[in-house]
Length: 214
Image (cartoon, rainbow, N blue to C red; front, side, top):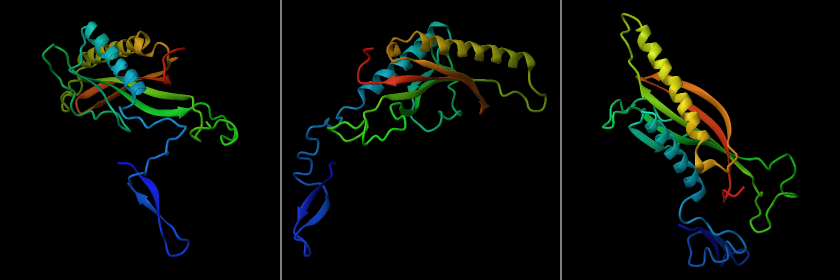
């Protein structure tokens, strides 16, 4: 639905501004500027779908496939309440990629109305950087609360968790989808345990631009 302003006669100054869709609502609205996107965000799709492919392929090649691989959008990580503990290819768990935020790295304290606005759009000419998280949840044995933890089981789960840490880092480091987006590794963290799940995440910065050309 498009919204524009159309003028109608009014009692005071002879006109009245009415907001709402109209036949000529968008005529000239984007004159001299970019047209609105009509087919999604191809840059974000390239980055996130590419990263998800790299993560899930790396896990599978290492013999630790996840049952579900997805591009996830949310203010927080996927809920740790359904880890997919068994799937047909012998894998288990859920892997995802997620954008945490997007920042304009061009904003350095100067007045953007004096330096930085594009003449055609009247908004800052940004240099966007996105923070991206890749992660995997795995099923773990919740153990018997009466008898306490099984130390060997916890040791095995810890070793497998660090294995996933390494695989996520390798997936990011070797992913062609982000080769020319100046990736900067930020951190690796364990997550959980919660609800019979535990996992690993890797966070990184990437340049967001129309083209991957350096």
